[in-house]
Image 1 (cartoon, rainbow, N blue to C red):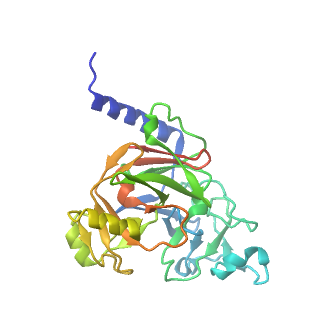
Image 2: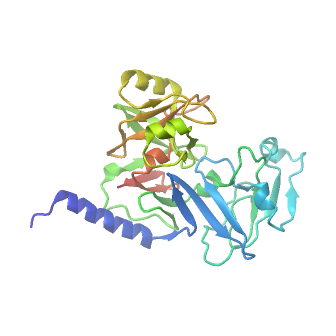
Image 3: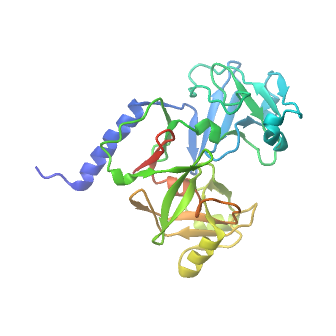
Length: 317
């Protein structure tokens, strides 16, 4: 019997999604909006806490506004504690025992960050930092330490975040869509081709931009000013701009950094060609990878399973 190839691919994808959901736990309270991801939980005292999730975020923390709603005692890291010098210099010198969560809000088990066991909120109760300022940390943060060494599915298509207790069965999926990754610290790096040239990009679900109203009007693609984006090393950005004057380009597109934006017609990632993809021009220093950071402007086309322990990422669409 003849089976249409596209129908076959759709069937395989449906079977794989079923496998993903059956082998994992959906993180309730996860919300996808304009290619960014938040997680909302409620404490046993019915206090709502909303976190911005960022696979490249430095630490997990709650801001002062959230802290003011809680009754948890504040603990301070001593300034003469040499083990935590770096934390103290960055302003992460205060933490609390996070209150227990209301039933129905699933978080993975505690993930240790350092000797203080500073990590994420769970129903068991554990420690979490207080964000050092209200400028950069306007929102509560779940960062790279929360994601690291675990297995996640970021389903941008169906807008679900899944945590897996064990590796998923990916044998039914074409291996060309599986990308081996290396790490910079505990941040994954993945290969992406742009205009036929392969670069290495940081996997960054938290990459975002606040567009000017002018830029928003030019793009006119149904998303808001604040949206998930991707960052491209300035030298590569300039080369692509010169090579493709037909690509949409917006000077001073970012409202807070004034960086320019380029809409790349298509990129190649894990055997797929997708686009358009928005990139902000970014001056990077001391990177040990070539391209920049790839985020929601590219991820919006995919269901992505990131297996930190086994060092691979699977893209499906």
